[in-house]
View (cartoon, rainbow, N blue to C red):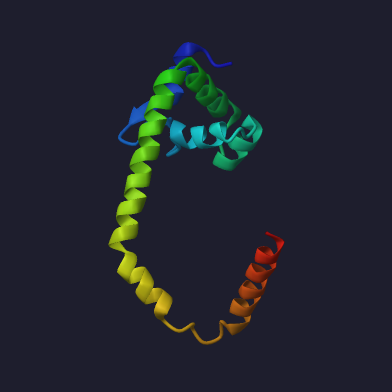
Length: 124
């Protein structure tokens, strides 16, 4: 396990929130996987972290569980609000794109996708 001083230097606060030093990965990214109960080895591989970075992130989360969870809830809420905002802002554009005819030469892949969708729906 990393020492307390080393752990502190590996987890820093940036404008994005609590971040693993030297990366753009926030502790909220790690929390997405932790709350989904993924194993640390999988999380480390998905986020391309070193063993030291991963253990520091998990140690920090465990040591500051209440504060991290409170911030994580705020991040999730803000993320959902942004998603809804941009969905509303782009509703007309998305509808316009969806109404356009398919590009020539994509018929085979579209047929394959439709067959796969039908297969998945029949399994449900």
